[in-house]
Image (cartoon, rainbow, N blue to C red):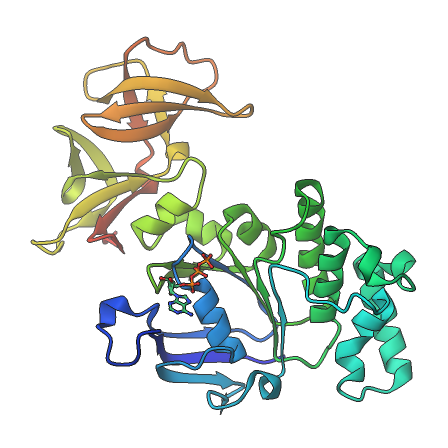
Length: 361
Ligand SMILES: Nc1ncnc2c1ncn2[C@@H]1O[C@H](COP(=O)(O)OP(=O)(O)OP(=O)(O)O)[C@@H](O)[C@H]1O
């Protein structure tokens, strides 16, 4: 296991002279804690695989350094970095048994037979592969083969980190749920640094202690699932995490008030020094805005539809042209066309050019 530091790391597939905006990974400095469970989350093309491949050594960075426990490993090959990697599709030997497949990464490193047997038995038990240990991998389902791949990634206890690149893509949806929780439990049992790439927020939030959100080649926030939900550092995080995502609407903000579509709503903090030229927006999660009967003093919205998610209902409304979602409180008799909106000021955030502004007490 290792602490991993990225120091001013950046990558362009078009070479170092490419324009900075075209870099697949814009310059980033950050630390991945030893023994942490991380998810690298973001939409297709945002740079997740590039970052993972830089850490593993499959890709050499255009700029910057990678340190494992303080040692610069940037020039080292994947093999020398001592990293285990699990890909989207199974990487196993069909002609070997499940047991031989699991043992392979250990035998390859000359681990004594007794230790190999004990570790293989442990990993097989954790992944429910024990009954298959003597079967040829060839005849197994795609799910089982991917479980073997996961096992091969986890079998060595001396790796600097285990990197997973969308490892549950080929897994049947039912089993996906089980494996997701299992990976979390495995992390607790095995005490390994794990980095898990996914574009699926549920997968990221169930697996990770720390979720690193990427957007357009940048890490826009790194935090616990609760931090990402409560206080998105970037409008993209607000919109990408949560279902429905955060409402983000243009506003004029002065002191402790925001004006949206001609109405004033109260803010919990004061915003006195917003940059004059910045695009100012207010962000609030649908969970913290209640639909109400129209009333003077409430921001009014036109109701498009009601989404009933079982435990909670969300109204899809429009404020002027802006789409907005609000919680429907239990027992509310839903107005026909126009409703009022009641904001919880402690959960209304202000953004300048997409970045969270802290405000003062
Ligand atoms: N080998 C390559 N050569 C040139 N451009 C590449 C290469 N690999 C990735 N890119 C580009 O770099 C950017 C980031 O891609 P990357 O695969 O890292 O994103 P991602 O978030 O992992 O997406 P996905 O989930 O679709 O794999 C994209 O614009 C992609 O087209």
